[in-house]
Image (cartoon, rainbow, N blue to C red; front, side, top):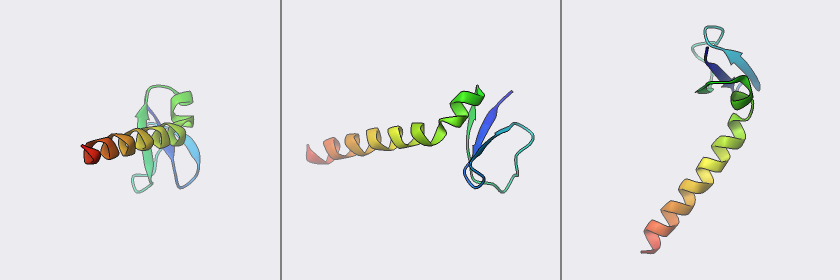
Length: 58
């Protein structure tokens, strides 16, 4: 079963229970991973920003 983080409702939803028009992050393997989706996204964005800066500085 997959889990999604619904950004609009700020809650974790199970596969098949999501609104197809919702802003979702996922899929995730566990409910805990989905619950931490915003933190994970922020970490990934920071890593990509750092990589972009390093690329542009070369």
